[in-house]
Structure formats: C-alpha cells, structure tokens
Length: 192
Image 1 (tube, one colour):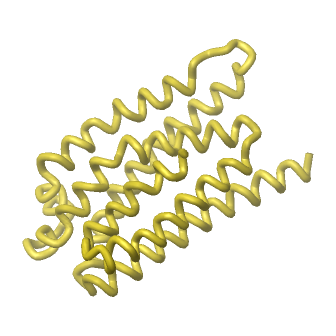
Image 2 (cartoon, one colour):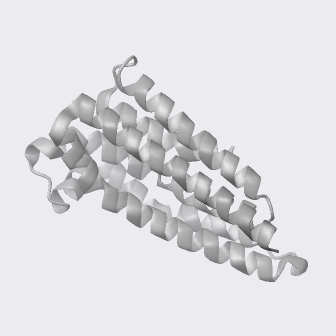
C-alpha cells in the first residue's frame, strides 16, 4: 500500500513540477520579449487562469471521485465531467471573443497593458474548454490507476509549452500571442 501511495504521489508531483517549469519558462520568455509590461500583463491574467484551473479541477476531481465510488455501476461521470467543463467554459470563451480588453481593464490594466495583453487573454479564454477538460481527463486517468499516463501527459504538455513558447515567440515572430498559443495547445497535448 505504501509503495502504491508513494508512486501515486511521486507521479502527481512530477506532473506538477512540469507545470511549474513551463510557467517559469513562460515568464522568462515573456520577460525577454516584452519586459516589465509583459510580466505585469501576465500577473494580471494569472488570477483568471487560476479561476479556470479551480473550476476545472473541481469538476474533474469531483467527477473522478464519484466515478471511483460507483465504478461498478457503469455511470457516465467522465462524459458528464467533460460536458460540464465545456458548458461552464462558455462564459469564459465569450468574454475572450468579445471583451478581453474590458476584462484586463477590470483586473487593473492601464491602456498600454490592455493593448499588450488583449490578444494573450483572448487566446487563453478561448482555450478554456481545453484547460477545463484537461483537468477532468488527468483526474480520471489518475483515478483509473493510470498515474503514469497522467504524469507522462502532464510532462509532455509542459515540454510542448516550453519548446513552443520559444518557437512561437521568437523564430515565428508571434511575440506575446505566441506564448498564449503555446499555453493554449498545452492541454491538448496533455490529453492526447
């Protein structure tokens, strides 16, 4: 039992270290590209990402727990978790499509920061269904005794984000938007 618990904890922590590494890489590349203003925008957007993470994790972990309890019944908790993730993400997507600038202003950005961060926030908010669904997929994988798969998925997404942050920001010339694209594709890589 202790060996199984240790394996579970190690793999979960390894996945989270990967996420932490890509957040640091994101921060580094953004600071090199956009300086202090880029970091200011990133820090204004992080609470939005935190809210997306909290809601997605709540749906994923809660659904995976219910699934684990009633696995023998054959209930459809996974499908429900993905459906709720997509449904609850709709307001975020709509905010991203129509008023990302107003969201940034509400978070405290001045006109210069709004101009710099509007596209970044738009891309992150439009990617909300993928972020929220990712939390459900990884929670169900862990709960279905596939902790290695969840860890490999998390690490693959993190490596993707780090590599493509650089590629999208600098060689592709997408700048701040490139960092958002790399982050938005990260959960798709993780779920794959």
